[in-house]
Length: 268
Image (cartoon, rainbow, N blue to C red; front, side):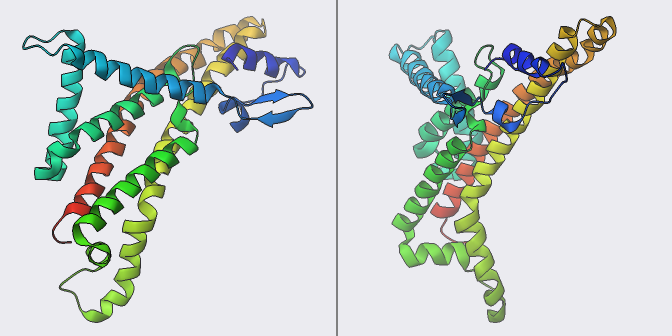
């Protein structure tokens, strides 16, 4: 559902403005007797974004040359940024082995976030909670898997939950806290951080844009003048959201590298 259709829906009910709801933000469709079903729009954008990531890296690496073209340069720049600034910086000697995965994860999240400010799309895929949950679950399985593979099952949980050099009675309190923090809560915090930021930004832009369309659609000269304010605000929010989009992709990948490093570390 586009912003213009939303504004028409709000104007239809007695001309009273109603702010977009969570239902509108998720682009739900009502069919038949009014049953609400999830729109396929997010899934279409998800698949399209995945294909764009694959195509970008395939084209960027297809004709590698000493003097890179624009796409090869862009691919190398993104890879170098993640490899040097995240993978090697956090994971040290293990950084190069994980650089490809972390770069792909960064670009994938960035593309899915960018859909929120692309005309006609206007929907960040990561504002659907299932997508951040799936990404966080994948990261959880990875750092649990590599940690258990390196240290063994009991050795890994000892690494994650046992802190050496403290009085024995403190372990009664700290072991459950470390277990909860390092094993249970990590995927939840990863997912919620990405989802909440993208959902909130999407809602703010939608409210400002729909408010503009509503004021301009009333035909009242004063409202038309006042509508300039939310219009300017919506433009400013788009640029601010661009910063948040990039930052959230970087933070997700940074935390993923930190979690992997904790699993591969030799000591707590």
